[in-house]
Length: 469
Image (cartoon, rainbow, N blue to C red; front, side, top):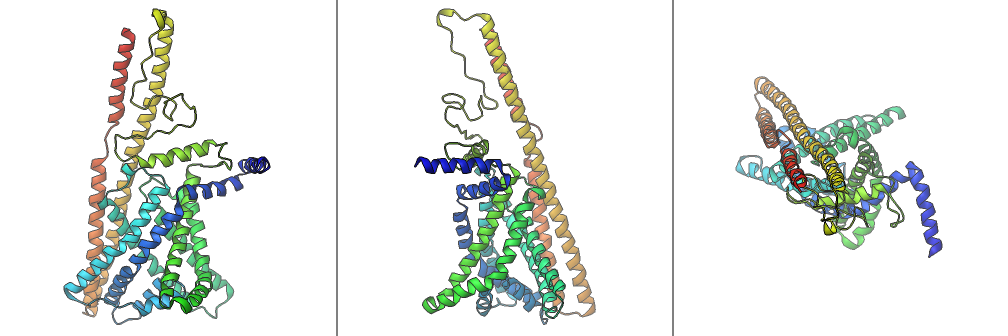
C-alpha cells in the first residue's frame, strides 16, 4: 500500500510541474466532481423527447415558407444529417401538421414548447458546470427567452449547414483541396454554434475568450464524431436490429444524443477550468492544492438559494474553530467581541492594538464587498446591453423578411408572401420579448452598493462601542 501511495505522490509531483498534464487532469477531475455524466444523461433524456416535436415544427414551417421548391428537402436533409444512419429512420416517421387554421397554430406552438425541454436541460447543466448559485439562476421568463434565442441560433445553423451541404454535393469530383475546404467549413460552423451555446446557455458573466478553447475542441470532436458516426452507430444499429427490431433506432438515437451531450459538457468544463485557473489539482486527496480548495468552495456555494444565505467552507483548522472559510469575519459583520481579561488585567495598549487589527480586517472585507456589488451591477448592465444587441439583430431579420414579403407580393402575388409576413411577426415578437427582458434587468440592477453602505454604518457603530469600553 505504501508503495502505491509513493507512486501516486511522485506522479502528483510531476503533473503539478507540467501544465500540459495538470490542465487535462483538472478538467477530468472537475468533470467527475460535477457529475457531468449524469447531467449529459439528463440532457439526452429531455433531448430525445424534444427532438420529434422540434422536427415536426421544423418540417411544417419549412413546408409553408418554401412551398413548391426543393429547399424544404434540403433543409430537412441538413437537420437530419446531424444523426448519421438514424437520419433515414427519422425521416420515415416525420409528417407535417395541418397546413392551415387553428390546428396549424396550436400544433406548431405545442411542438416548439415541448421542444424547448432539451435546451432548458442544457441551460441547467451549464449553470451547474459554472457553479452558479441557485439564487442567481434565471427565472422562468428569462430562461425561456434564452432558450428561444438558442433555438433561433440552431435554426440559422441548419440554414448554413444546408448551404455547405449543397456545396459538398456539387464537389464530389472536385480536387482534394476543395473537399478539405468543405470539411473546414463544417468545422468552423460547429465551432460557432458551440461558441454561441456556451455564452447563451449560462447566466455566468463569461466572455468570448473564456469559451473559445472549449468551443474549438468541442467543434472539432463533434465533426469527427459525425464523420465516424456512420460506422460506429451503424455497426451497433445493425447488430441491435436482430434483437430489438425497431427499438434499435431508439438505442442509436439515445446513444448519439448522449455522445453530443458529453462532448458539449466536456468543452464547458475546459472553459471553466481555464477561465478560473483551476489547476493543478491533486492526485492525492491528502495533499490538496489551492485550486482544489477554490473548486470545492465554488461547488459548495451552488446551494445558496436565497439572497440572505451565505455558504462558507472550512478546511481542517483553517481560521480556527468555527471560523468561516474566508479567514476572517464575513463582509458587513462585526468581528466577535474580545473576551474580557481575567481580573481586569488587560491594559489600554493591548486593547487599542486589538481594535486596530479588527478595524483593518473590517476595512479589507468592506473593500471586497464593494468590489462584489460593483461587479454585479456591471454584469447586469452588460447583460442588458447584450439582449438589446440581440433585439437589434432580430430587428434586422424583421426588416429582411418584410422586404422579401413585399417583393414576393408585388412580383408574384402568391401565398408565399404571407408566410414571410408570419416569420417577420415571429422575429418581431422575439425582439419585443428581448427588449422587455433587458428593461427588467436595467430596472432590477442596483444603482449603488447599498449593502456596502449599510455594512460600513454597522462597523462604525461597533467601533464606537469598542472605544467606550
